[in-house]
Image (cartoon, rainbow, N blue to C red):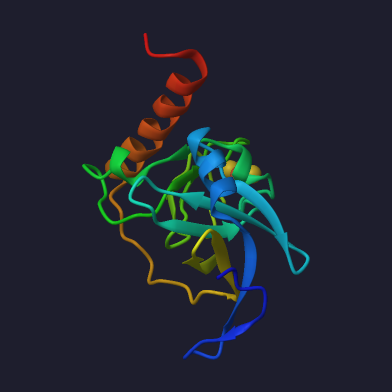
Amino acid sequence: MAAQALSAETNESAFVDACALADVDDAAARHRGLEVNVGGVSLSFYRARDGTVTCVETACPHAGHRLCDGYAADPGDIEDLLPGTGVLATCPAHSYVYDTKSGVCLASFGAGAGRCVVRATRIDDDRVLVSAEASPETPPLALPKERSNAIGMRCVELALDEKFGSA
Ligand code: FES
């Protein structure tokens, strides 16, 4: 059943119909996020290989560029460095890397890294529903700089491989 109406949650937040799951999959096949305007806010939807759908507000917290246009790395591609993330969104402007599950900036090559605004998602048959409200922030992540750099480099390498092919 494709839910069009608001549905009450135990935390009083509401989920709204956002897009077709197939459209998120199409974007994921290109290693990108799917941009959808929901209630006047641009959101980016991502799907991992395990089927999980995550969503963040599209504007990069660093300087507002569109996260959906950057390379989206599957969590499985970096789980040796940091397990348990969602899809990793690499901003196309300055290559900061964000976990679309927690919103945390996992790698930044300069100052001013912020945190993405995360929205909870649900899959209802062939539709994706999204929370009308931002998710609460998760606790800060104490990631060693070497690990952060390795995650950033991995995502850049994956993006370059996608664009130019492996050497
Ligand atoms: S605007 Fe996204 S990393 Fe700078």
